[in-house]
Length: 246
Image 1 (cartoon, one colour):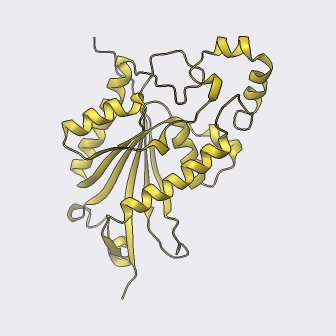
Image 2 (cartoon, one colour; image 1 turned 120 degrees about the horizontal axis):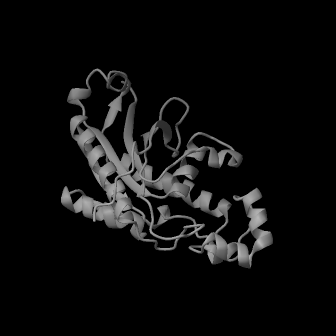
Image 3 (cartoon, helix red, strand yellow; image 1 turned 60 degrees about the vertical axis):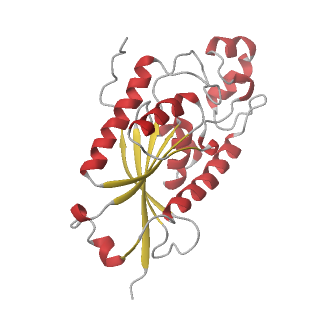
């Protein structure tokens, strides 16, 4: 008898453009611009149309609790009667005293530390800030818990079904979870999945309004423990930013 595999597709959405001048926008509850709201809404709508065509079974829309993510995500979920949840793990990194401040403010108050940060953003200790190491560890464990939770809700497929999935796509519904979150969270998760060094963190271009698709498997081949095996499927940037609707 073939071993059973559980598969889950996760789509990570980055919020739209924000209406402030923050140099480091972490846990500051920045609002979206009108164009930023439209940006995220259009991406969600586009993925919704693709989900219907591809027969995706959307288990939930999950969001960071910060307004730049959850306001549009919650409204969209209500519009299409989708389960909606907040998850504090996937909010942005806390940048402490610098969080939400303008570049000019940081430059005036912390000129030497700013120079250090610009040379090594991930490892420079900022006043009262969450370290990148702690942020990365939190996201790593949160991701494992998140994926395993929704994998448990997915049906098992045997190897033959898994290999023939594309041929039978019209008859198979793909269990999917949407996660609306932040650029730092997405980069950290991708760097971990792709086993990239910290030095490559900023090589990942994750623009506002983009969507990243990841396939996750409960186990398979050498992956016989509690860690899900994850594959990057696609990174889709916004083709054009919408004009503000006033």
